[in-house]
Length: 277
Image 1 (cartoon, rainbow, N blue to C red):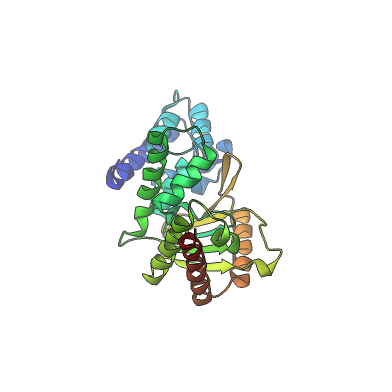
Image 2: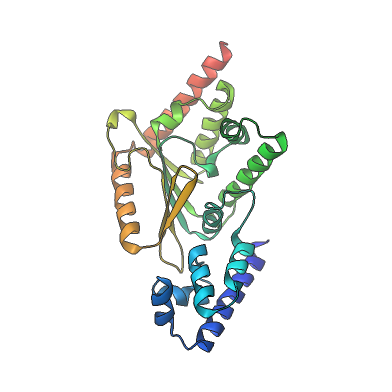
């Protein structure tokens, strides 16, 4: 679904929510209280500024007795079978964010991955997967990354732990290509990357990834991930804590120029090893 038609569909979602809410005699605040979000969020859903999470859509259906209308619409707009259920909404947020800030402790973030890197990661997690399944994942990852090629791309700020540069994913040549790709995006000024060196030792969010989203007309949100699950954090207090942790990581990381030098040096190390084997 193209971005324009997707936005029009969300506007229809919001119009229907407003109509059915008013028919049921609820104000935005009253409905929000009953489905555990603020009245302001209900207003943003109705204006198609913000998209509700699935559990909120389900609670709205139950309260307004809509026979699952909002859940079905949500699934049609957000569900993409190429992604895990918990990640489909994150892809939607990437498309609408004005700024994305991310900390990656172990893996190159999806938006920065090359096809070979994605292929190796997918195969490691799915050793019995068919070639078709693996290529579907690769193509989905490449499609996501297209937002960095758009003129209206979000500001994208990434902090990589040094482990990300040192863990070989795929062959040495493929890992060198991956790091070259990141360096190229930095030099093209499409992304700002800092590296958190191993010498820092203990650091905030030890071993945990976090992604922070900012939007033009909606409150910020954050996303964290665990084993086969993910959490979108809308609560302003939790988002503020996540932002504070990210600020501490940014302060401990190498400056951008030193980070770029380290990335290119790591790429050369992998290239040298590949050429000697």
